[in-house]
Image (cartoon, rainbow, N blue to C red):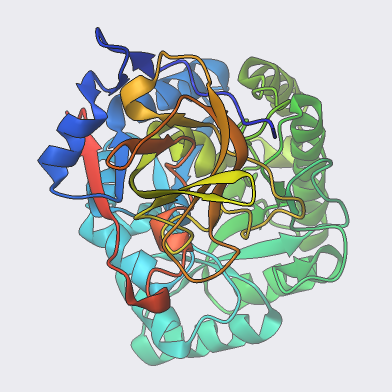
Length: 412
């Protein structure tokens, strides 16, 4: 038997011991959506998470949603009224952000390899570009000249430090992301001299961290770096995007991030920030911390089979919908997400099984040797922590199976 992560406390058992998601049974939600596999997203949980951020972080810090975590249109439309900005990483995400109702001036566009047509579209509508190289800066300035528009430009900085303990480090060495910190100040002076609408700095040092101290240390280092660059460039940044990095407890042994501790330390860092940043605004961009725990993936058991002493529950879902839960997206050692049998949510475990998907690959394993109540053909398996990096982070076209259905509940 292998351990699983802890199911978030928002999910409870109904009167018959069945899983309840936003007050409804899994079967009722499947009936509403029309089919399995199904992603269910609870907007009430997302709103509560945003409220926690607002209460814990200093008022000076704006909240941006990194829509790559979950760009489902109904979520974006709700988020546009709840957060201060959207961070996007492609022209397609930019279009989705605008379509959801977020003002272009509150959208920032990061990511290496932006094509000229993406730069032009962003400049034309007033989206802020987080420049990833000097060459990208040259292209953006040239496009702005051609359009007769002062482009809104920020610089993404590749810092000398990284976020300690993060699941994915984005700084501290050679990287395709951002401009090395020692080359940033001359570029800022060139952008300002060229007449660009200078918007500030973006520093993203890592993601999926659960250590509040590590996040706070990185934020403190980012503030110091921003002040140093401002002094070197001779101009203060209007805004500093401190990145994100807030993780969620996917696996056994993970402890939830202490957001209050992060907020307290950040408040102290901002209170002691150098004078050159006195008029600078700050933002934090979050994705999975806002939406990850609010999603559940529901997939139905199609077959129950025995093979050489092991039991397999074969489902109609798989890694083509949830690559991360299969252990093939950003993890070195495969570990089990929280998992349950929806109809027997309150029952004790009776057997050890592996939950697999419908794809012809041994990689398609959603639960590896997990202890669960007995499940039969037709039962629904619920996999938690699925509000982020699910459908759009998975190879949905692989082997030609249908895309997963998505459903948002508890909308305003």
